[in-house]
Image (tube, rainbow, N blue to C red; front, side):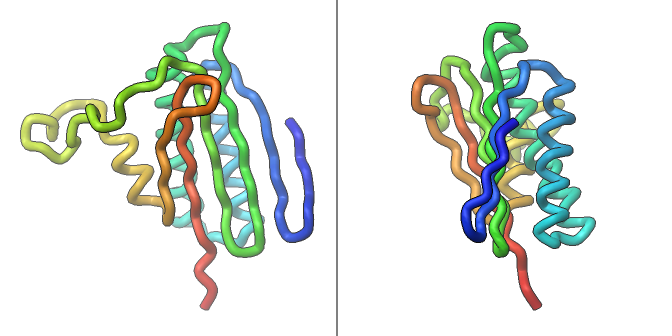
Length: 146
């Protein structure tokens, strides 16, 4: 794990195995940094869930649990926001082909709502192809100052 400080920004990068224990590690690191930012308990829990859902997708759907593929995690924290980027080394996919989890035929399915939840819990969500292959998601949560 690499931690760099530059001015008002702290940045951490790490590479995780394609395992469910890595999902716990990614969530723990993100929630810890969100706490340092000053997010409240509920906001931290929601942000942690967004990170968890996206990391599960990277492990399960992107890397398909391959021991030869890694999950790339980057966390950037400033005084105003936290950004988590999660990338896999999978084949990527057509984002337009994702089924609508709110469509009547999908409401009772046990999977397919992770990205919907992640989007609901962050202020900015970006899903794109990762340079070099795979998929990458960027989650941003802003600190709302009173």
